[in-house]
Structure formats: C-alpha cells, structure tokens
Length: 306
Image 1: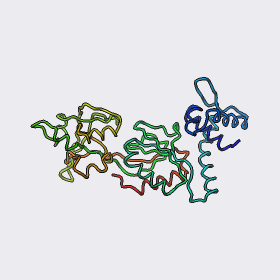
Image 2: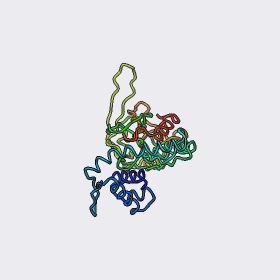
Image 3: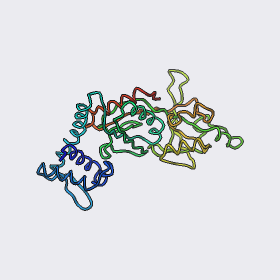
C-alpha cells in the first residue's frame, strides 16, 4: 500500500463527502479510492469512516486521524518533492478558486506566467461567483474580495477593489430627450440600473461625496436602485454594460481595457465608494506550502491592484 496516497485519498473523501467525488477529482475509479481507504483502515486496525448507503461520517478515531492527516499529507508530499527534484523546484497540483470575472480578467494572465516559470506545476482553477469552502472543496488558495469573516484562514492582502459607477456611450445615446447621465446619486432613480446580487447590499448603492475641504466631513448617501436585470454573475454585468443596457456599480477591474477607450464612461466624478480589500486565503493546515507561497508572491508582485 502506498501509505501517502491512501492518506491523501482518505483526507479528500472526508473533505468532499463521497468516494465518487474524489474519484472524479483524481481521475480514477470509485473502487480504487475505496480500496486505498480500506487498506489504510486495515493497517491502522480501526475504522475511520462510518458508511451507510447514503452518507459517510467520521468515527471518533477517524476524527483524530483526519485532523493530523490533513496537515501532514501536503507537507510530506512537498518535502519529498523538494528532496527528489531540488529545493527550489516546484511540482504537483495547486488548486485555486476565484470569482468568474476576477479569475478570467485578472488572475488568468498571472497563472499563465506562473506556469511558464514552473513547468512541473499543474493548476486546477475553479471559477465560481458563489462562496467556496476551501477545506470542503480541497482548495489550496482562493481570492476573496471584501472583508474576511473566517478567521481560521491564513490571509495575505494583495490590494483593494475600487467600485465605480459606469455606463456605455451606447446607453447614453439611447436616453430619451431631457434625460441625461446622472450627476448625483439621486439621479439614478431615473435610470435602468443593473444589479449584481452577489453582494449583501444588492440594490442599495452607497456613495461618499468627495470632500471639498480637508476638514469637511464627507457626506454618505444610500440609494435604492431599480432596473430590469439582476444577476449573480459579474460577467453578465460586464456584457450588459458594454451592450448599452444600463448603469452598473461595479469593480474597476471588471473593465481593465474598456475605460481606456471611448466605449465606457465613469460617472459621478464628485462621489466615490469605499474600496474592498483583496486577499489571498488558504487553509491553516496549508500554511507551510512552498507552492502556495510561491504563487502568492507571484500574484502580489506581478500586478498593480487598485
């Protein structure tokens, strides 16, 4: 029995909740995954998993073993790789999660350059605009935009995400006579606003007036907006803005090139919004991973984050 492989499969089964999910992830059969876990149990002389036809659960011994194994498996694998290939050589799989828009527009170019520098690394990139549980999904590193709620993760701040109010010239040209682009937040009531539902604030947009004097207290305004399109996809928001469908309050990185040309207009020059922090986060038990540190350094050093 390959003890390390059996431990890895056991850890993944617990994190993913089923043998079949791990078989898909590791490109093998369900019976092969089961065989490794059974062999591990036989070697230890205890049952690690309580199996029923519909669910899996850890036995008391399994709970103790899982807590240790999920820390040891990645560290042993990386230590063996360093010895076999040289201390500076990185190899193996790195599982990364990000939102769809950020992953495609900002992260993917950095992944390409990282792979060029480390040809023996394989990256499993998972893009999802919903919340991803790093431990349950077996993810090594994720990009989180906004304040962090989970203190059990190891976090590294790499920048901030500035939100802007934006529309296309095509939308401006479609406005009826007598209706211009908004110059104050209250003007948004007269416009079709495209709402991203992935944020808790959804259709309530908050703006802060730029102070005219350094001593002046900035005025904050909340506006409940209305429109004919709501979506949990930042990609849909971006495509709809470019198509002239309305106005959006969106992160500046969603339009990395379009604002430089003549297609889009940033609105409300006299108003701003609080920037959200951008962090790279990883599970605590992966804190010593050389692959994670190398990729984090690459992302933090290779990009300018607004």
